[in-house]
Amino acid sequence: MSIERTISAPYMCDIRHLPPIFVVSLDVELKWGVHDSMPCGKYDGNIKGERQATEAILDIFDEFGIHATWAIVGFLFFENKAQLIEHLPAIRPQYSNRVFCPYRLMDGVGLREADDPLHLGVSLVEMIEKRAHQEVATHTFSHYYCLEDGQDAAAFDADMAAAVAAARRHGLAIDSIVFPRHQVNPAYLAICRRHGIRAFRGTERHWLYTPRKVADETLLRRGLRVVDIWLNISGHHTIVPTAAAPGLPVDVAHSRFLRPYNRRMKLLEPLRLRRIIRGLDQAARRGEMFHLWWHPHNFGVDLKENMQMLRQILEHVRVLQQQSGMQSLNMREVAELCEPVTDVVPATLAG
Image (cartoon, rainbow, N blue to C red; front, top):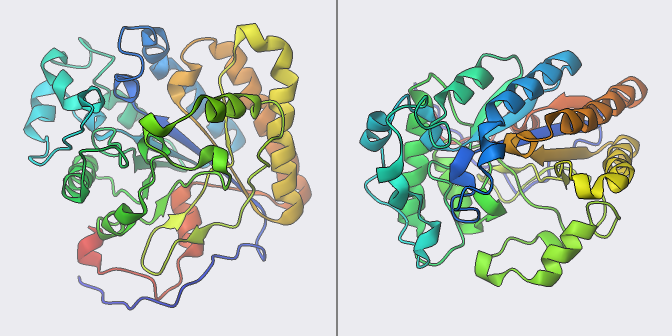
């Protein structure tokens, strides 16, 4: 059935008349998320622990009734290497820095997940999709970097088509996207919408978090972001989610990265928790949204300590639910609140 709708005037999704909102999103990527930044196996312990961490996180979400978005790299939707190779897009990014290209690693991928748990992960998709209130979203098909030299709109369009098709094989519709390395390219948002994407995870509204190419990062920004874990440099980033322009996905911008436990910094753990708690309190007080995100592999080691921190956060969310009516929503559900009836693309494009 084809549904024709028109595009409304520019708008801001105003949730102030609603209870405050708590959003959680997680980036599921296995080795594909760090193949270029940690290529020598330094992080393999975290990745091998990702499945156990994912199950533990899902269990605590069930316990606290948390709705979450899991943005999964499209490579992980296949049962074996042969299926993955069969569904690779013909048009691929031609990064100037070939280190960024995951396709160069295909020869080294194992035949099935049991042989290669670092690169194949359909069990993660199946684990997540069966749980209540958990949205399966895309982290692009190939962990695609949207701001790096050598890639272009045609390659991104092909990547998105492959990501949507891979999810459809599991009977899943993709409504939300998380851009790898938070390289949000405004020129690509219309492409996302044409593929049925209704929400994307934007960045904090501060110069420390403005999307950049890897080569354009600076030691100053990196250092200040580390300090921002414990001390409030950039603000709490509680927001009213917005649509960037008519006909584009809703920007469900993140507020805080839940950085993993660090044994060398364990004396600063109370500051890390307080930073998040104060952001949640501000969202509750203002009637706004607080969006927490991380990767399951961040919990792949020191699982006990990381889960203890997450439990403390969710216990505080429960208090705020009782005091202010705070709601737990995933990114798709936020988009549903924000989309005016007139802002819809034809159903044939949305799949």
